Length: 72
Picture (cartoon, rainbow, N blue to C red):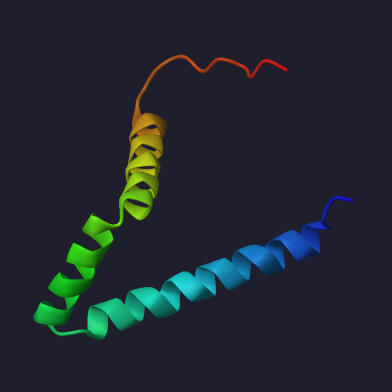
């Protein structure tokens, strides 16, 4: 059964709230702590791969070109 639009919006809101909390916590750290966390992220191959995928998707979305419809 698919989720209702309201349930999907609540899910997105929770994800955005979580992201905001973690971002604020990261920004409140001193530079040494931020550096340590960044190194841990860079050593986590799965997390690094996810970040790279997100970066590639954003780059592709910013490229100008002809849009092709999805095939089913």
